[in-house]
Amino acid sequence: MMQTYFIAANLFALTAFLLGLNDFSKGRRGWRLLPLFLLVTSRSVSLIIFLAMTTDEKPATSTINALEAFSAFCAVWALINPFGYMSALWQRLAWFWGIIALFLSLLLLFPDWPVPYQIHILIIVVFGTSLILVSLGQISWLHLAAPLVLALAYFFGLLGLNSIFDLVVLLAYGFLIGALHWESVQTYLGRQRASEAMAQDALFFSQERQRLLEVREIISAVPSLSQSMEHVARSMAHITHSDQSVILVLDVKAMDRVRPAAIYCPEHPIDLEKLKKTTFEIAAYTPLQAAFDHQQQKMLYPHSNGNGLENLYTIWQEKRSGPTLIQPLLLQGKAIGALILGNPVTGQAIQEHDQALCRNLASQIAIMVEAHRHNVNLQSQIEELTAQAAQPTP
Image (cartoon, rainbow, N blue to C red; front, side):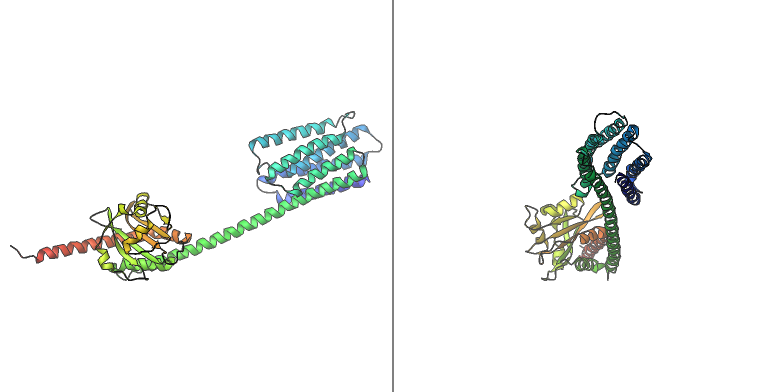
């Protein structure tokens, strides 16, 4: 019976090592091959010594007892993951436990050592179980079953129940194999999930890049400079599925004021030509002022405390309000206008990928806005000169 036990324990230890070799061969967990290798070594040496024993030799029996304790230490050590959830204090405690476990194993080499070897192993396994639990960060009954069943086995051995002892020790090694296999499966599933996530991210970024290129082509296809702002406002509303789109530009002569350059509002007609001649003081519109001051995109929602969103919609004579995106348009680090997207009809928030799209297109739209501002300023100067020339000479 004992011969069968030693052979079976050796085979179980070898199986655990082969599982670990498949799972821990790369990365930071490779160190865990060491306790598994030492486990196989200790079980093999125990088997060899047992087969070589002809009588009840005390030195040989003491060596086997020491190897039994060392095997228990290696089995528990293989289940501890110090790179998991262990703090620096617990890592130090793990090293201290390892030193104590080796010391307890060495004590058993003395033939006349009075303390039963089962007590040494119980001390090693019980304290090792707490280290396993801490290193996992969560309760894994399969990992805890191996040391707990091993402790139960040596408790039976201490009581002299040797027939039960052999079976329960082998069961503990079976749980060790199961725990290592579970880790291998979880590692594989984790890598698979990571690969799927990377593939999804790559596909998403590829689609967004293609979308960005297509949108840039749409915006660049301006019918004429005079229609550029209307084209951009309409295109951005369609692309982002927004109810309304407004482009405000800073007045060339009064940089603290803005005027509407384009309004896309299909729900009700707006006399844009009349509205274009009206300027609005930026300071009177809190969200607009904040976007210009911080030079960052702002996402606002109605009915928030004092965000001034309802007041902003009065610029283009809209009585309703909804989730609104304000994208400042910058050129050489200076604000020259803003793109505003709003959903006062549907009440839907501007999607994150549409927010990112507006950020990416802001510089291109800013160039078009600057050209529009200079064109309007030039037309204004021409009209002034024409009016002056038409006046009769005194």
